[in-house]
Length: 502
Image (cartoon, rainbow, N blue to C red; front, side, top):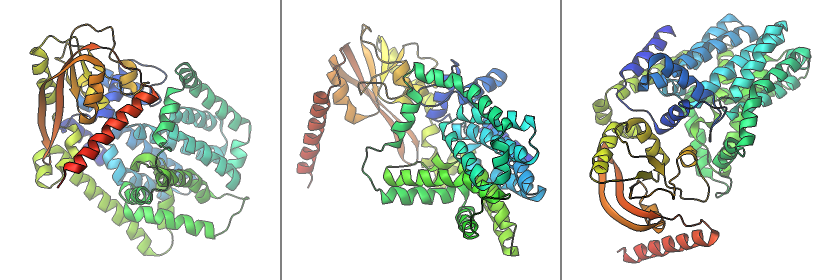
């Protein structure tokens, strides 16, 4: 594990790629610390602020906590496995988690999953200690880890579900949690989380609303394709053999029957991974779900599959060893692709890196257009481009703003830097969305094209912007009638295109 940790750190130092747009957004948050942000709780911003204060503002300094957090998570899981079962289980659990495909990828970027899993696993270890020895330090650690997990990502709600199930199926957990020490842990959890609750209340529960909007339950129901895609993705997230083992082991454990007396550490672990898998799988069927939305399942899941594979016939252990070996080879291959863009292109994997390439060059191209005219502001129609220019457009002196498509801000960029009607003088519109150009034009008295930017980003793809000089900004109110008119225009355009097709 130590060698892999240093390899991952070394990879970050040499990585020629830029930050992903979400990473850049987190970095923007870290410049102004708060108890919450538009789409996420604050912990990731606090961590980035710490690492960049210590190591500078380079891209690797923004990401450096990722391998540190995953190493810490592996250690927590190893300690938890040793407490719940034995040291052998603990050691294999740490190595298994540390080498699953998702962790190889997540160690190269800074994400809320890396932060959540660290505190999640710390909470699991604290619970394992509390159910075993009942000491006060374990209660304090559990409350603190729970609070920090919620300050990392609201998917920490599955931790509370897991503890509720632990109370039901595991007698030592029941005794530990339904006690004075359990109550103190709950109080500490509430104390840590309370400032974020106040922040949400002061901001109309923006983060909670954004999380609910991500569920997208207003879309078409019963999406079998999305369901199949999500389940297939989990084979890549956890590894094919380990994911199948996780499901099979759960079924075998349920077949043993339920008992509400005595110690049942395997059933305890099921409570910490099965709810997330069931909920997100249902979400995928109802609407959609990204592959990482159930990532929290694979902390306790790593211990569970190790316990299952270390028991019984010797071939089970070969599945574990083979999975660790396969995942490590895949991870090393991914590192080679990330460090050598030309190699990735020749291997047909350039598309995987298109979102992290050519951002400094994009900023330079925009700067050239800005210098050709006297603009009062730049306005973007895509938050990703906006945030990338906040980081890589250091030579751009013109204020960066966001044009708002809808009646209310849909993201942090629109909430923090909306294009104001008070701006006088021309605005350079940087549009990445051709379908929105006619809508943007409605908000201005004058609107004319001045050029475009095309930059190759690999795999035959390019980053393409249409540029417009616009003056006289008067934002039209986004009423139902307005939206209906926009939709009617788009439907008419689609019908015309269909008629002109041979």
